Length: 293
Image (cartoon, rainbow, N blue to C red; front, side, top):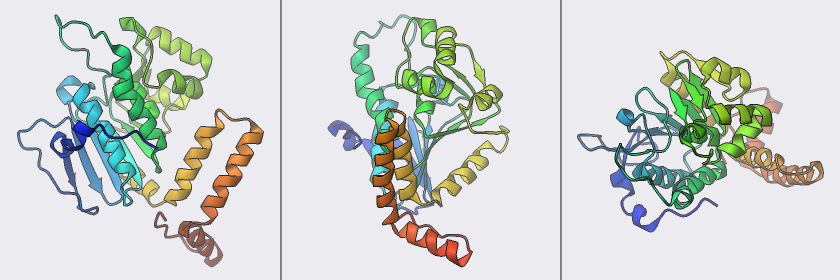
């Protein structure tokens, strides 16, 4: 299960995010006004979009944004009407990583505590969400911003996107799950290369390497993202959630163990309304109308 929302954040959640959308889930709409909101939540149909909203800081993650993300992910996890989550950035960046403060500020000392408070629950929460999570990478994804993109199930990118594992360039180690995901998506050799050098991986390279699975022109990227997410949200959501569990567990399991996992999850999927609808649609030679149940 996702980690609980911090008690002090629960009561302030609505004040720390902007919520916009079509009202399909009954969520109240909030205009941004003059208030700075680190996270904007948009809900359209069955798709929830989290927009990192610190564009002048290239969406660097400070404590307020990190805790708002954690709270939002848990809210989405309990929202029966949401069937796909999208994460993207406002302005010209996806996310430039952990906020490092300004010149003259003292260096943080409890880095381990920061990671455990902010990134561990966020990354685990995303992996445990019972729906597809899409990172719509609209610009640079650097350091912990790269980690955030890697923590999504699927990454799509605009032609302006690029990725950099820039931790070593400031004397740090990749964190927020980067060492886990990079080796799986790139292989050990490439992961070591990009972690050592911090070299930029441009959008076309990312597509060739498999870091992203779709690449779009910058113009129209938002609409293409909405279209892609809406298609995922029309799927058999419970089957997709079980598929997600199976694939993530498969990277650490033996073949024998994974065959047992698949059998258990397939039994669960076969008992859903979506399976009954999918089977009926197949037999009737029509498109299925999945409801996510």
